[in-house]
Image (tube, rainbow, N blue to C red; front, side, top):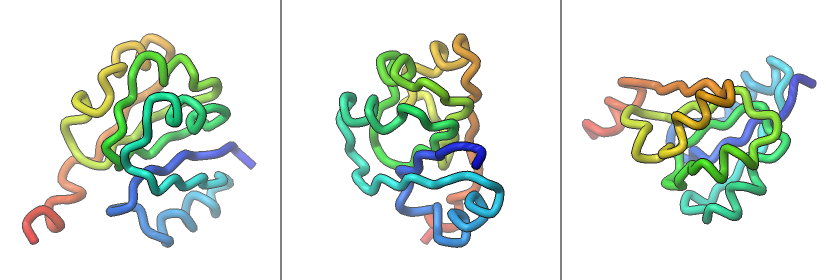
Length: 110
């Protein structure tokens, strides 16, 4: 097992995406509470190697410091800085930030 990936996205990450992560050797830990508090998020990111952010939670410096094994945060959309105010701190700690520009264009147009 390559590690655990936290997924808070409930709109764009489907069972087939979870299967792809599982097939690649990752265990997916899904939290379907889009408005987690800072304390809840601090607990949720512990021992996760990846984090797919799709809720409305806020990734602060405190959350970044609680992330013991995190390698990457992927925001499902664009404009991640509003949801990851700790993005610079993450980069300083070697945590990569990714986005999925245009991935949700069809859903928004609907």
